[in-house]
Length: 389
Ligand code: FAD
Ligand code: DHB
Image (tube, rainbow, N blue to C red; front, side):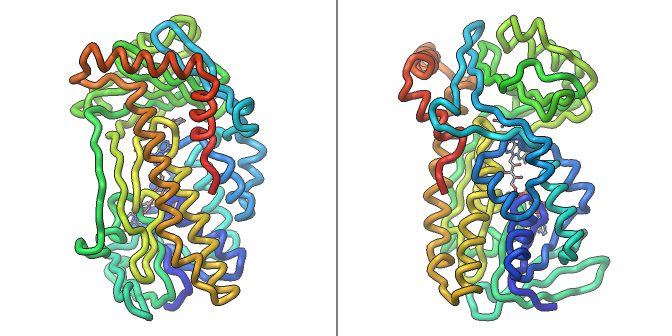
């Protein structure tokens, strides 16, 4: 087979790139290791920046998102029993959209399939060859059969555990990583959200987040130990711990119910440099991971796709490769700022096992400063709604 851009990974990054390029007449093949149902079963992000929603519209897949997503023009930050709001609208003139990763991935799959997109599922043993040369190709197996795709470019959109990043030799690749001594236990439940805005809550017992998907679907998270497993937490234990970590007026109003999904994610900051090696471009989680505090993971994947999409368009429409040549540098400049925001927001709101009394006072002072200082709120809001592309 031959295509212009071979995309490895059928998560949100790979699908969005494929759909955007398709609309500009650029041919792609998407190789996905799992099944469509498996990808759609992964409950992950829920908050979209304006840059992301604009790309979805440009890809022609914004209709359901615009009809069913919820605009949020601010958030609540709590500290014990205290709380305050940060308005996104007031400080930035814009807002974010609550629309689940599962839903936007479904919209992208539906569009790719309706428009005859070439998506190959259940691929195994994907290998990228000659990425540094003029004629790269990708080999893989499906049901034991060997296949080969010749292409102009390879987009590595295969997440943190994919093969694309590993293809870049260690003599070229530099990785930066920070692991956090805790994880997030997430629960999805068919209950009304406790509040109409998200609540990011610092507590003596650890961080908690109250989020949502729609009027009868709530998403809650609590900071947990890295040694915990989801089955260690009964629904009752989860609800009781969540109530102890949010201000009592919310705890009293919280509607609980059976969990329909429960999972634990470890927290990690990670960046690979460079994000381009020859004709291979890394996008999204294949190149970087943020801790989820601040909802930057999926949104940072979207800004990579924006830069790569524009670079490829410039190349195929005008024969100009300057956008592709600048891809790694441009993407990384924004990635590092998202890393910074996610890291500071994680540090601001979590309990660390080795925290001293001094560290706790610093956290308290940081939160007080954010509550009382308009400039600090503006900085928070600008980062939360997403820095410009
Ligand atoms: P992925 O979604 O990881 O997609 C990569 C795809 O590539 C997958 O479908 C995978 O099956 C496929 N693949 C992997 N290896 C291969 C291979 N060798 N060959 C072919 N295909 C391959 N972000 C937030 O903003 N908020 C959150 O609450 C949040 N929660 C998260 C919870 C978890 C458990 C995880 C792991 C991430 C979470 N994120 C969150 C981050 C967000 O979901 C990711 O940033 C986003 O999914 C990145 O999209 P992606 O397409 O780059 O990667
Ligand atoms: C969600 C996840 C986040 O990490 C976040 O900061 C906000 C919302 C969510 O899954 O709804």
